[in-house]
Length: 198
Image (cartoon, rainbow, N blue to C red):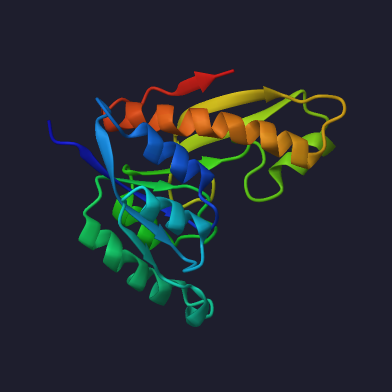
């Protein structure tokens, strides 16, 4: 069978990327074709290379806020890798509508909240401040609106009385590493039914 090709974009250590790479074996319908970062020093690039996956980096800093110019460079290694699916895994640059539209219906993102709650940053602290009973993470299709788009999976984590943002984040991360591979596998099989964990 011909495997779906998956490109993963990251900005940091790439723990979700590692979970995705490690899942794409055996009878999995997809295989990684590229790990791409906006930071040439990203730890995730080293981890991907160690697993034999092609890597590339386009440093966003020289572009000084010119997103279109940055994305014009970012798209070059992506186009060369010919991915069927693009997974954002801790990619910390906001993408323009032009970029997103090019991959729409094929681009996934993981976000550390139970969307539509807490789009954007500092999600764990915001959930605690709101007095929520539960928190979690969401995998969704990427659309031009930030942290929006059809939900493809969620994992729920109870909030404990003694939780700090750091403790909560660590428990959510464990769930992210379960949820994202499960959603990717289902999505690569052509199934958009949401995966619900917890």
